[in-house]
Length: 114
Length: 114
Image 1 (cartoon, rainbow over the protein chains, first blue to last red):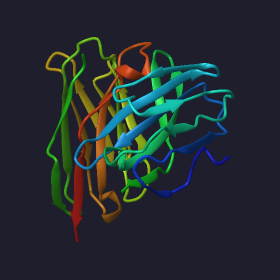
Image 2: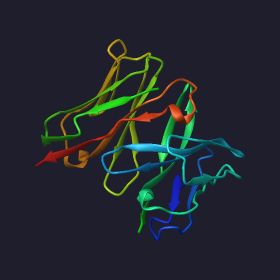
Image 3: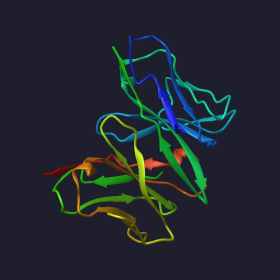
């Protein structure tokens, strides 16, 4: 049971390049999400999905696309990278317990845009 | 919308002493309050949580308290050890909420002095 895996661990892009951050889970959780973490600013939600075929925007969705074709995978696409997207990106899964959503995070992808 | 404030931003305690991190939230509809520990280079890890129908919860050396009237919740770590050094995040969520309602505090960097 690997939990939540993210690839790559590190990535350097040039402004204007595109790429996809991969996230996979083996916990059969319906809920998945992407956060970015900037120094001194905690975690901010980019996009999330409550199940295969369903996605929605979080707090900071601009410049990012997602899709959810399977329960296991939730890739995050940067369409045209900008220096403001330099950050650490975390994927998370979640399971509902009663009325609450418990979240489990992957190890992160550190992205630098030059 | 919900706003979560976390204090202090940094905390240094002597090994063996106790550490307390405090959070306040603004939306009285929030009913689930998880705490995450993030070690250097890793994703946040859920360490304890509390629901609004409970005033206190304890798990070995860590405990969380909730004051619904004052909209305060706190993390208490007793008999601190070097491995407790990390960044700690509080969060607040609402019942049956979409992910956009899960709001994180800005984090507390805890350092344990030997």
